[in-house]
Length: 158
Length: 158
Image 1 (cartoon, each protein chain N blue to C red):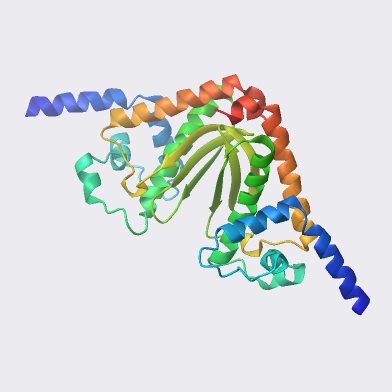
Image 2 (cartoon, chains in turn red, orange):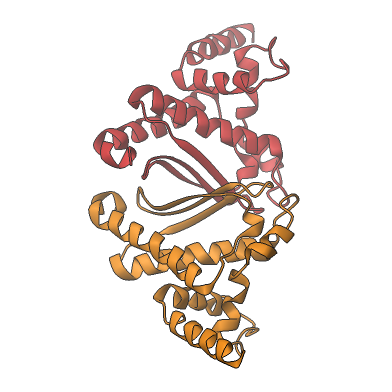
């Protein structure tokens, strides 16, 4: 049991160095006008992004989406935009459009080029199995965005 | 007085042949599941899109945006998307993202190409001085969208 806990912490420490997870943390701390999270560890800041399958089943998808969940979705895509900018120099806009039903779009674009297009479903349940999955999903979208930005630089700068 | 009215009607009749205004009318009639507008003239259907400067000043920009106004904004951009499709064959998505303050984005995109990007401000007051202005603004956005679609066909088909 104690062994299991140790190995779990080690994985977490390693994954926390992911540039994408660091970008999320930067987003959260950057918005922390009142210093609410100043004493919080990175690990703790990322915790709400982890929603197990079990927990997801418990979140109803009718009714309004929790504003904190909407804020996390914004942070997720802003962190992606930040990482693409760091690599390509392209400043981008993030638009998250969610209907009452939790369906919608997340878009990241620069000029006339869409760097990220993602349809959202059941946004009430936004979250990832683990920090590894969170990092993986973000890095996949970043890699695709960078690829597009480098392939169509002219469109990205319109 | 009677002369003035006649000349006004003539202008209206002519402007109503605008492909963009016809696309708006098609959008409204297409959504008219219960036949509410079946007996309405085209002219009457377009009337709510005309909001004079005087009327705009009377619409408060605090509080929620009237759902009918949001619906008109959607129809406006869907009509643009429809006209671009008719010319280029590109099917596109329309995303209108409006905050409570009436600020936001209207986006029309196909593949990874943004055919229309428009920042919205004071969306509560969405409307045009005249049918001519409405047609003009739509046709300007359509022309730009077609130009982009033809210049970057590869990006539009991604």
